[in-house]
Amino acid sequence: MKHYLKKFYAILIYLFLYAPILILIIFSFNASKSRGNWSGFSLHWYFELLQDRQILNALYNTMMIAVLSAVIATLIGTAAAIGIHNMKKLKKKVIMNLTYLPVVNPDIVTGLSLMILFVFINLRLGFLSLLLAHITFNIPYVILSVLPKLKQLDKHLYEAALDLGATPLEAYRKVILPEIMPGVVTGMLLAFTLSLDDFVISFFTTGSGVSTLSITVYSMARRGINPKINAISTILFLTVLLLLMIVNIRMSGNHSKKER
Amino acid sequence: MKNKWLTYPYLVWMLIFIFIPLLLVLFFSLTVRTPEGLAFSFENFQRFFEPIYLRVLLRSVYLALISTIICLVLGYPMAMILAGNNFKRKNVMVFLFVVPMWMNFLLRTYAWMTLLERQGLLNTFLSFLGLPPLNLLYTQEAVVLGMVYNFLPFMVLPIYSVLSKIDRQLIEAAADLGADQVTIFRRVIFPLSLPGVMSGITMVFMPAVTTFVISRLLGGGQFTLIGNLIEQQFLFVGDWHFGSAISMVMMVIILLSIGVLSRYDKEHEGGGLW
Image (tube, rainbow over all chains, first blue to last red):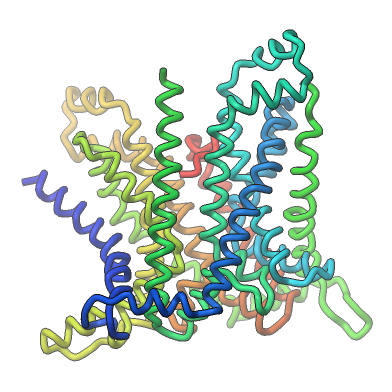
């Protein structure tokens, strides 16, 4: 009896979590504009998306910013993680607290403070300001993904490479980097996903004419319901789900290696 | 290893894009525009404590608190079910709580718009039963519902992770010493799960109190929260000084509550993202 009660409760909670998303996805295939009645399967809204210049443009911006910000944040973040790892305890603590600041600070504050900076230095709000903002909030997540890998690393590996005649640069490129690569890739995927997902910071740091998918969705949703949003949602949901599964599999792979 | 220079690009980046911007917010919050230029003043903060703005702050805290309590009441039993279950699909069940956290919250909020609106599925269902349609969207309840829906996983996951680490032998020992189920929960399980509860509360309360999207989409702009106030000041009114002051107040509230709550939360020191 108690077991069934638990099961029933769990099902109710999962229904609460997933029913709205599922209904959103189902109605993206609805032939008519109605949100209450099903009038037949159709890919109509997806074709509409393909013809919407504004949405295609936003998609292009979103992808470009996600890829560029993930790559640049990974470069800066990985280098920083290696440096931080070799620091003395106190200095490390200070820098790690600085790293956590953008993670715990409300997005809205990060967004508007960056907007103030960009306006202050006379940078036109648009693609570049968006990219700089995305790199900024991505770097801490890369550092937090790479650092644990460095902690697992054998301290003497680097010295051994030097003893065997490698230059410091070679030692990093051929010994250290391959060892921490899983953390680097996870960090990059995480950065890519976060960039794809961001709305609040983008909303504050973009200017007229340049828009990402979430900004487009927000301005459409503010005006009311639009089945095209359902179609975008479905595509974004499936993309993030896929990325998340890859990250998750990679992370559980790392754990099993650690246990061995 | 001498490679401290590797952190320099990062430090310079953070200085320019995190530290200086926050200083600029502080600077704007402490100045006002006068005919002779900018002048130092506490006026912006004083203005925030006028009744209309104070009411916005109170409403934000109130709605965020209610949502946090509902999340706790709904989430704690769920976390217990997840932690207590020994069956095979446990990983999948936990993963199903992680997925919505990563789905764009804008879309999750929009999903409820389509359900609650006048011609939405819920009202269609009501009229199918022969009942009159209800005004569900653009109410305070819709805003709370949106917050609970968006942030429930943030409550369940930390509590689950603490519960699943509790030593089973402690519970058995308590039972051997004659404690009944209720006593075990009250005296053993619940106190041990407090760190998870605290970080859950932080993770729900924080985004709930700062949101401007949920209140805009599900409240229809009738229920201004502190986030909406900031958005308005920066993007429509153009009063950066007042907007910065509100942001500073909000930041202080958030950082204080994190500081207080994190004393219970030793688990996440290592930087658990999930």
